[in-house]
Length: 72
Image 1 (cartoon, rainbow, N blue to C red):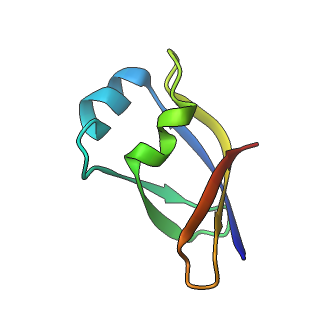
Image 2 (image 1 turned 180 degrees about the horizontal axis):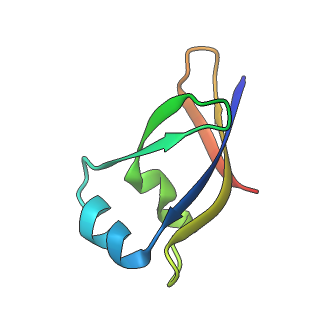
């Protein structure tokens, strides 16, 4: 399994305005400088009135297929 750590700070209004479509993606930069593109829908469980903010860990399999996204 692969683990990627990153921080994210998207306001509620920005998330709704830009990422509400089914095909929208969020581009993040990991702590190691790797750029990853994830479906915005993966962040919906973490959406609050403040938006999506905090530290996250993305876990993928050996083929970089999504396993889970965790808030740290």
